[in-house]
Image 1 (cartoon, rainbow, N blue to C red):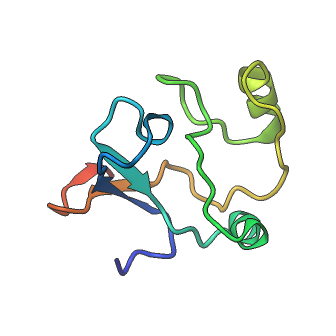
Image 2 (image 1 turned 90 degrees about the horizontal axis):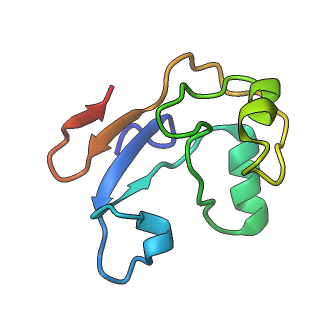
Length: 105
């Protein structure tokens, strides 16, 4: 896991103890250890992990600024914490932990 902390998400097999509200209709759980200072501070402040989704509706491109988030997700998001996005122009890499296969590069 030399990509952690950083912008790589690893897919781990989900055991039967992982609740549906975390894994959805998937047999795996996506895990990322962030280096982003705001997300890291939230984890430290809550003394635990944050569970989240991507910042877009399925099939839509990712939102890259607060205004877009407010326009496209205001019906489903309670609060938007403003801050730097981290400078990435593309979505993060997703890899399978068992095979190392790049699912999204």
